[in-house]
Amino acid sequence: GPEIMSKFYGDSERNLKNIFNEAEKHAPTIIFIDELDSIAPKRSEVTGEVERHVVSQLLTLLDGMRGREGVIVIGATNRVDAIDQALRRPGRFDTEIRFSVPNKSARNEIFKIHTRGMPMEADVDIDYYSEVTHGFVGADIMAFVREAAMDAIRDILPEINIDETIPIEIIQKLFVKDKNFLKINN
Image (cartoon, one colour):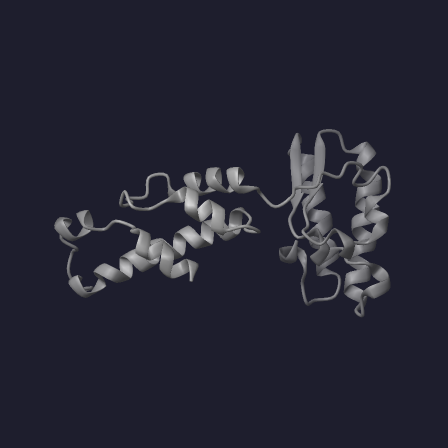
């Protein structure tokens, strides 16, 4: 979504139109607009003309979808209350699918995905972290795991000379430990 916006007059609308035209040329295609609320906020609540013009352009393009065979438009937002209501009318974004915050079991699966292939000590209890991360979504869990891995790397930094090739013995010592996860959790 935000990538469409430009500070130059008319560029944002042109960017949006170009995306739809390219999608039509290369059909079948899917146009995925992440953070839809950033390009299509409620027109009654925006202060700038650019946002109003972009919302109007998007509505026009969506209204013209009937003639665009093989192009599907999907919008995603975590602020559905912030998008212009006109987008939610039939013929535009017809179907809404709500994704709730993952439960413990789903978080456990997400942890497994993000730690797959990661060298970890046996003391890392993924079930525990699935429990204590209530309210986390996939991106939060990915960041959590990444931070624990970075902390494990910081543990071996004193043994590394940046100007030299890292000895295999040091790389083989690199394991993410429970203490790395605990540090991030606190």
